[in-house]
Image 1: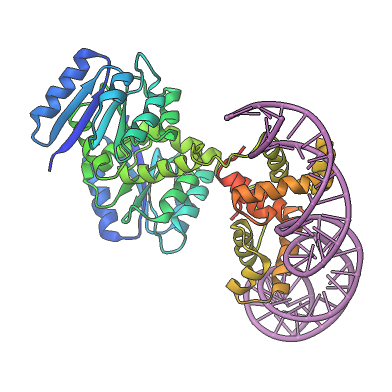
Image 2: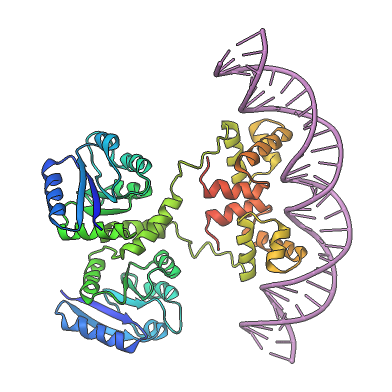
Length: 209
Length: 209
DNA sequence: TTCAAAATGACACAAACGTGTCATTGACTT
DNA sequence: AAGTCAATGACACGTTTGTGTCATTTTGAA
């Protein structure tokens, strides 16, 4: 079973050499290529993977992701870029891109990337991965925001956050509702809040768990 | 300039073959190896990169990350794991790990990973990258989550989320508390929830605003 | 061993909340 | 002109919540 590929790339030389390259490998079929997002949106057919230039003439590649995914919900999209520290990299991932390759990348790696997304993975270059990781660390739980909740309290807080009622929480934990209310009391003290919704808000925003 | 490496891995065979492998390559020096987190924390010296088993006998590898980074602020850490869909993968990245390799990975790729972190990148396997991307998409604005709230309702919801009481909201909006409660009513209907904290939870998680 | 938390449970009471029902006004659609 | 919807306001009623006070048992650290 071959992997079917579509290409949206305005640089004619790059587009054609990529097409030739993939076609020459028995593993892939290039079903179509377009040089603009508009044409791709109008005429593309379903393929397994789309290679999408991040920098198209008529539309930011980032917007094109959403439109292409809407037209072909199952398609997986790999972005093609020249600059890897482009702000658009992270944005396009947030918008649903499944992977990333640099245009200068060794053709063998591009084929590897195609195989990887086809198998459900997400090929990223190490430096793009680095950017993602940094963002993660940035909104990761700070050791500072440790409210010294006990295990039980964290358990209860999780259930509060998921919207359970006092009674439901009591049943799930096999304790009385009064005890649950006692846990609330201590949680409120530690988080310095006075209502359930404040606790929920704080817990989610500060990623307490 | 060689890349200096430290290894924390409790499996003797794997540790030694890794050491031998890296040492035999002119590019790396293995400065030390330990079979437990405790020993590593006590006796490790500064190196460029630490290869750290995620599943150590004495301490979750995840905790070890923080301690090692505290002792050697400039060190970069690559996690070693057998399972790549371990929940710990994402956690360890949140805790500051710089990269990830599977133990079964081709030794050449492990060396490539060492080079990549040394150069400031983050080597990740495609499937780990996929997990990260999914979390990102989760955090990204969903076009679907439009509950057709009116402007006023969004305004009220924002205040609910920030933890204000009914009375406070009424005062801020210069309307009666009864009206605020009426807005709640409509918000609850549209979000399909029945309590304030459920509304807060849904609003934050689905980024309604 | 003693002492401090943590976890459990209970009672009470005022305040807040969720919801049913109803009403008025202004704005926009058809 | 009629009709829908948003925004405002009110009253009532039962439920839930927040909090004060107190008690028992288990657990872990000093």
